[in-house]
Image 1 (cartoon, rainbow, N blue to C red):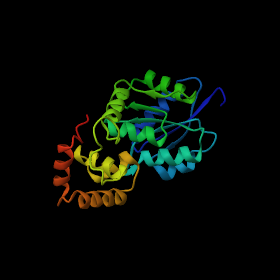
Image 2: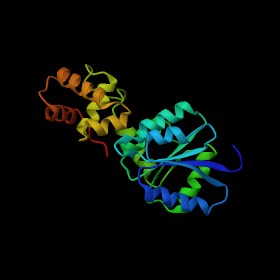
Image 3: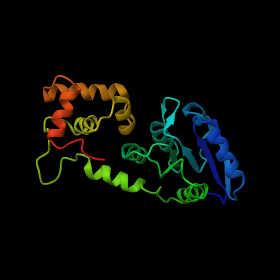
Length: 219
């Protein structure tokens, strides 16, 4: 990496992109080399010379999590810094699973964003205030199949158990798909399978069974 950090911003809000452009224009050593409003444009402007991508999670109905995974797979040295309005623990975990190296809220101060960009460019892992605690809380409360007690619902696969936990948290299929970086069709299939295995008629029955077993109680 050269002394200048080459950055691309991927966000479907033009006002936010303009704000980033104005900020970077005033900073030494940071060069905004491209902007994109979604995955299609991102694929055109991101290449091996880009050091950091600022990534929103909602891109006009498309998934920033899936795009993060795609770009990291294509460019292993690329660093993704998520900058989003979503502060829920599931979104944080999904982004980090996809390969993001940092996670900030859009409410972060300009100097925080600058520090985060420089840090992730160097390979550091950066999370905004409170975000790390939420991610750790989610990991601690997610079903793992280990621990002192027996694994709940042994008839379910690990993925089905994970989906059930998110269903019990009140999440819809689209949110679960984003959290687990799956397609909505795959999530629907998992939900259908777990309903059959649990011998419940509907989603409400699955939620009741899951909560009776201690699932869906995380923050």
